[in-house]
Length: 359
Ligand code: NAD
Ligand code: TDX
Image (tube, rainbow, N blue to C red; front, side):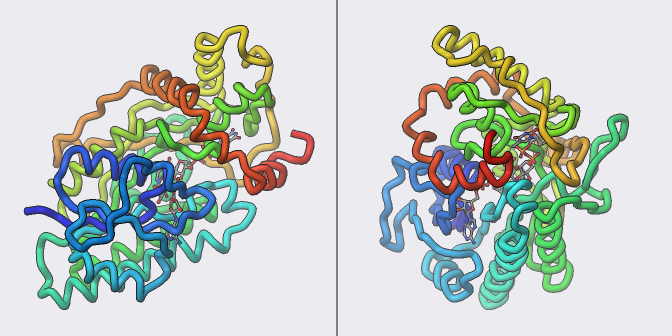
C-alpha cells in the first residue's frame, strides 16, 4: 500500500539524503516540512520541483514543527500516514553555546508533532499502518568506556550535552505516546553520519574545507575520543528497512561498525586531500592539525550494537569507511558552489564564538 510521508527537516543533511533515497526507491508522496534554519538549505533538494497540487509526489513547505495548526493542516491535506521526524537542532557545540532553541525544537517540536499525529490517528480509527519514526542518536546512551560493549537498545539513557538531553527528552515522549495511546511509533538511534550535503560545522566537512582554505584543523582535547561513522546512504536504507519491517513500539540501533579516534579521522582526511589536491593546497594538511580546548562534557566514545536491526529487518551495511570517506572528500571538492555560500556571516560569527577570534 502506498504511503504518504511527512518528512520533517527534509532540507537538512540526512533528511535531504533520505528524500532522495525514498524518491528513488518508492513511489510514495513525500511532503517536506522544514523551517530552513541556518542548517536547512533548499539547494539540498535541488532538482525536486515544488508542486502544490494535492496529488503531487513532492511538496515542500517552509514551516516550523512547533506550529500545531500548520501540522494539522498538512496531515489532513496530504492524508499523511507516516511521519519521518528529522527536524532538530543537531550540533552539540551550538547546544553548549545556546541550549534554549534545542529544548524548543527538539522537545517541544516533537511533542507538537506527536499530539497532532495521535489525534489524526485516533480520528481515523487507529489504523495499523500509521507510523511515527523518530530519528534519534547514539548520544542518548551517553559515553562508553574504551573497553565497554557497544550500546544495546535496552540500555538506560544517560545523555551528557543539552543536545543529547533534548533528543532523549523527545524520545521519552515518543515512547510515552506508544505506551499510553498505542500510537505506532519507532525510534532509531544512529551513530555519526557522514557524506554529501553535511553542513560544514560538523567534524568531517569542517576539516575538508579548512584544509582547502589553509585554516587550522581544531582537534578537541587529545583527539582520542572515538566515534562510529555511518555513511548517510546506509542510514537511509536502514530507515527504509525499519519503515518496512520494524515493530511498532521498538527502538533500533543503526551504526557503521567503523569506530575511529577523531585524530585518526582527521589524519586520514589530510592524506586523502593531499592525494587529491597535492601542490594546489595552500598548506600541507597535517601541518594544520591544532589541539584546542576540549568540548565541555565531551563524551569519550559511542558504539552501537546493530544486531537487532540486522536480525529483524535483514538490513546490511554497504559502505566501508575508507571508500565512503574518499567519496565524501571527492564530493566536497566537486561541489564548491554548494558549500561556499554556507560560509556566511552567521557561520563566521558562530565560528568565532566557538573557536576564538584568532582561529
Ligand atoms: P541538520 O542540522 O543538517 O538538519 C536539521 C534540519 O531541521 C534543517 O533542515 C533545519 O532547517 C530543520 N529544522 C530545524 N528546526 C526546525 C523547526 N523548528 N521546524 C522545522 N524544521 C526545522 O541535521 P542532520 O544532521 O540532518 O540530523 C537530522 C536528524 O538526525 C536530527 O534529528 C539529528 O538529531 C539526528 N541525528 C543526526 C546524526 C548526524 O550524525 N548528523 C546522527 C544521529 C542522529
Ligand atoms: O572542530 C571540531 N573538533 C573536534 O575535535 C569538531 C566540530 C568536532 N570535534 C570532535 C567532537 C566529536 O568527538 O569530533 C567528534 C565529532 O564531532 P561532531 O561532528 O560535532 O559530531 P558529534 O558531536 O559526535 O555529534 C554528531 O553525531 C551524533 C552529530 O552532530 C549529532 O547530530 C549526532 O546525534
